[in-house]
Length: 306
Image (tube, rainbow, N blue to C red):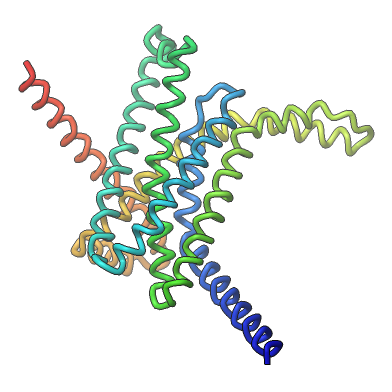
């Protein structure tokens, strides 16, 4: 009797693990586009650091991301049970914040480009140890804030997948997805920011023959490509803010969502391209409007203070 009960328990555990594995795969598939945006945005957020500070910065943001998900998972479960409508509004607010951050990033990029090699442009990068430490703290804080918004979408997508499952399966699946996504994203970010070091090590390889030459050549290509990749990721991360933020905004306003669906349905085989282009435009407009509102509040506050 005891033995049969033990094996029955093992069967239940195996079935539970199968269910969680299946739901996790579905959630990961549905979150794939957000995951790519998360990777690009966070790689962009940790660029500009000194080489010896890149990995400590990634580690700090990684820990912040785990804290974000430790907050988001129980909050998502409670909101979904008590006030499900609040999830949509919170995501929409987060989307507007992402759009605002994207607009500010674009403005900053063009501002620095306009300065060119002038003295003002040269002073954009902090030089003193105190200024560098402050710059690093601000980058980490900004990256963790951005991660919070992107993590919220991943958690909500996962929650929608497991909405009909028992509570314990919802919790286990959410925790599993949260850990896998965090480790995966920041593992890749760490690899990307240290790509030039890997290339430099390969270029100094002492292997002989044709294989050795190929390895050294590949290392040289990585060293040469790393700066271009980081610049590309900087722009991709900024564009991703508009895409993800625009998606939140569009899906939070029902008439706007229907308008997007109508345009996408009318665009033959270009549906996905048109859809993301529209989300990007919506995100850019939302970012501009948010920046105008923030500037207006700042002006009013300054005026009232004088």
